[in-house]
Image (cartoon, rainbow, N blue to C red; front, side, top):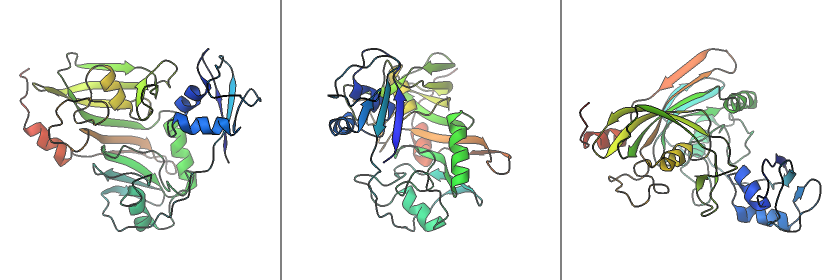
Length: 305
């Protein structure tokens, strides 16, 4: 059972709110169960209840159970592989494909496809549920992502990600017409207190920075190029919603706006630049916009410059 230590940086935040905000993979109810079972300590003492208030500087130690082992099986699912060598794969993931198995998605995932393509040649740093996965993109986000074939490469790429040395660019269609040609959203993201299935800009959230630049303005939407400085869960989707321009088709953050016939958000991981962990070569990959994105653009009316 791995132990993780978090240091609180504000006064008065509830224990369960704090630790669920620090680890977005689990809900507050999950951490409440951990606290009730004595698996969370504050400054070395077992807390009495999830609602106790923390102080800045408090040390919170969580013993998080190992994830449930799933019997992942290889599936012969076609992969759009942009590059492959003995260490890494660069994959163009289609919209609608889940990255790794989870509740309700035990088959048809990118992991199932990777197991068929690579066999045993995948890293296992993230456990048996996520072999080869060093970072992920959402089910309904399309585009480029990396996978690792060995643990040495995985650790090096994870370190690069943490130090913001991997440059990831996205394209997104957002509702409304954005006036400035470029801008930056610098707003902390954590799990929403109102809806635990959502992320939100909250006080005490993790530092999150998204840069955007207008590609083209249309009468009802704006086509953006975005650069991630950090990589929080749902970061682009949350930041765009926060500034009043949610991503077109977003089922979680766009409210009751028209979806233009999309089955998910119009968000595409368009390019990635990184230094190869073994060779030291600077590598750059980019993709064309997917068909769903191009089709949507073709039906929009541009605003003349």
